[in-house]
Image 1 (cartoon, rainbow, N blue to C red):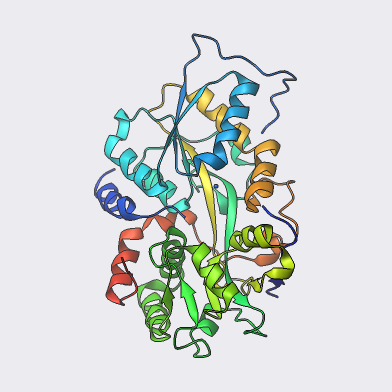
Image 2: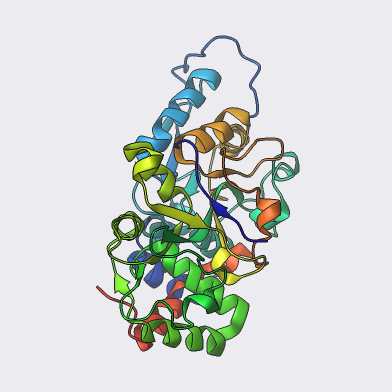
Amino acid sequence: MPTTIVPRHPRRLAHAVLATLALVTLAACGSSDTGQDAAASPSPEQATLTVYNGRSEELVGPLFEQFTQETGIPVELRSASSGELAAQLLTEADASPADVFLSQDAGALGALTKAGLFAELPAEVLDRVDPAYRAEDGTWLGLSGRVRVVTYNVDEVPTPPETIDAVVAGEYADGQIGYAPTNASWQSFVTGLRVLRGEDGARTWLQQFAAQDPVAFEGNAQVRDAVDAGQVRIGLVNHYYLFELIDEKGEDDVRARNQFMAPGDPGGLVNVAGVGVLASSDDTEQANALVEWLSGPAAQQYFAAETSEYPLVAGIAPPEGVPSLEELEAPALDLSDLDSIAETQALLAEVGLLTE
């Protein structure tokens, strides 16, 4: 059954062209033990790995510094939104200087897989992660997961909705739902809805959603804050935004809570941040070493502690106070198919939900 959670502590070408156009507009919304006891020093001859980084550099920077200290492999980060970087990689193709792409979103990874730009990752690394959270062809690997939830105000909503169809049944009409229309996680949810229910099914739900007169916000944090303040009764966000607010204000002063969705419901999409190695890289061995390290215990525990995201490697516990991914029973889909953002944006524009 879906659960209400009170967190306890913080934190090769036509396709490519289409994907490029979509990804340019997509806004970004976050070891194997090396056996070394002392930090290694990069040698002067050591080639530098170039990582196109679609996550917050403030968040992941310390991880790359630790990787360099432990392995001696220097890393240069080039940071922007995942959509922008994926579009750049599609344009650069085999001429890209990038060795590794770290993405906030599975759709951006899927676009590069379908364009043939990734190399297959080592089987022993892939096997660390459930097949649901990696590419079917082994070209990218999920590192951390985030779950779509309904966040609701406990003073206003005694029984929060457990399905997306309950969201649009009429109880939250007249401006009682918050959402972030330009946010990547919202557009990924709608893309997942299109994959799961087809174009017509997704269109029908979106029309019903629009009929509720939902309130558009800039991002998930603003939706969360509006719910907490009672400006709207419910909002559609990622699970970890509530943790951030509780960390900031204290649990007793937060009126927002998370409702995880019913098993298989499209509203409970689990999207991932993940990583792939460029087939054009001249440093594949070192790039694979980085992927191995990022999917190891130190990095996995870091994501759980710093952002309350779900570790995706077996044996690493999720953040305290959230159900396991197995309990959630997320809707079954190939996350690489979340790359069809252009079609999603066209549908959102058609129903009047793609605001500037």
